[in-house]
Amino acid sequence: MTKQERLEKQKQHLEEMLTFERRLWDAGKLLVAGVDEVGRGPLAGPVVTAAVILPRDFSLLGVDDSKKLSPKRRAELYDAIKEAAVSYAFGRREPQRIDEINILEATKEAMLDAIRALSPRPDHVLIDAVTLKGLELPQSSIVHGDALSASIAAASILAKVERDREMERMAVVYPGYAFESNKGYGTKAHYEGLKALGPCPIHRRSFL
Image (spheres, rainbow, N blue to C red):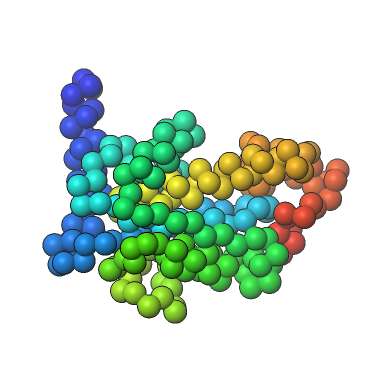
């Protein structure tokens, strides 16, 4: 595939990813926020959410589900999305809260925080696979939204980079669990660390 063909393919992909947003923009809802979370599955660390409002002339190529991107590409897009966005905000819930109310409810709380921190306030919210009770705004839940909506994908990238950097910092504070590479997920090295050291303050007791 030539460079030009690759570029055209990326442009086409972005157009497809903006389908939900364009539908809302055309209906007069000009401020559309995408919301996603990262960190529902790990044994340690917070769940982190992001909410992003993209402009109508958004043209950043390569935005996709964060799981499909390399760490280097995610880092590049993280900075570019922040620069291009009308607004973005983060939410998080710590392991203690996750243990207290369960991971799904903690995720929903963190999503609400991120949405409510946006300025200007969105006209409509697109959320990856979750419906938020208590959200005072129109919302749409999209299954696999991070692969189908540019706004949700952008939020997934912001949340992923934010959380990964947090876990790299935690690897220095709590060495021995390989947080720098596993980001709190249950890898062999992580389980070996747990066996040798027991849980640390950022482990989710309800997950162990």
